[in-house]
Length: 124
Image (cartoon, rainbow, N blue to C red; front, side):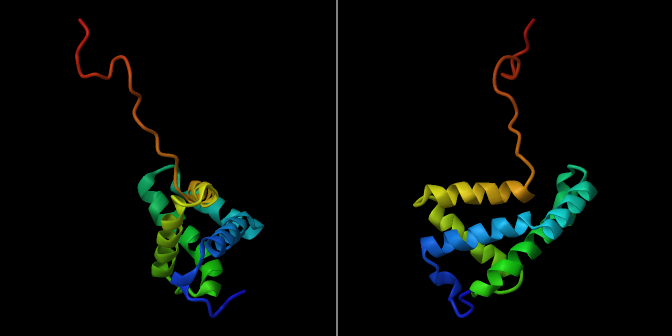
């Protein structure tokens, strides 16, 4: 691992490797169990997701990215997220992996249905 790496200096390939390592960390049995317990405690409530699930997800990411020069706190995770976001438009694989990572700890966003009956005009 490149412990002396500068966080902001990760290339797209390096960022992809770190992202893969973070995703793998979420799949580790102890982390999967921690996430499952947090998910159970949250009961699909968005406020509780932020209270229970997000801190666990942040800790799992911190444990991986600190070896690549990111600070071992929430700010480090945010910097890593911004770095990944900056590469998403250039690299479809990073975009896909980023979506996969987000799906691990963010609830699916459901959009209201569009179509008949939602136009705001009462049918009479």
